[in-house]
Image (tube, rainbow, N blue to C red; front, side, top):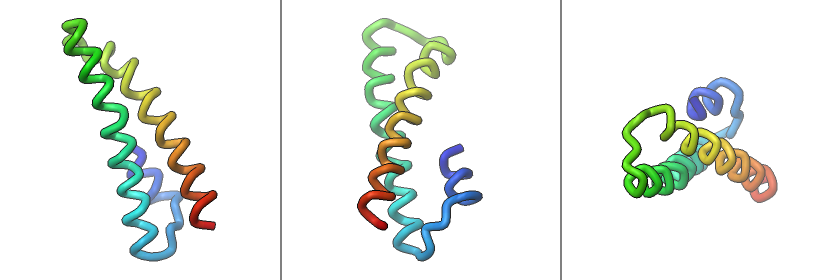
Length: 75
């Protein structure tokens, strides 16, 4: 979904901007999935809704931070 938002509304302007946006999305995905995996493994959770309760807010929080960093650093 974040990639769709970048494609529809993001205006990086050049190839480097697109690559930076895609890298931020990859970093956010890894940053949200690692703690989710650790919690799920520790507690033995297999239900998708429990994993989503952890992963979705973590991803969007990291995505907001990286969007702010992009604006501050690249403009």
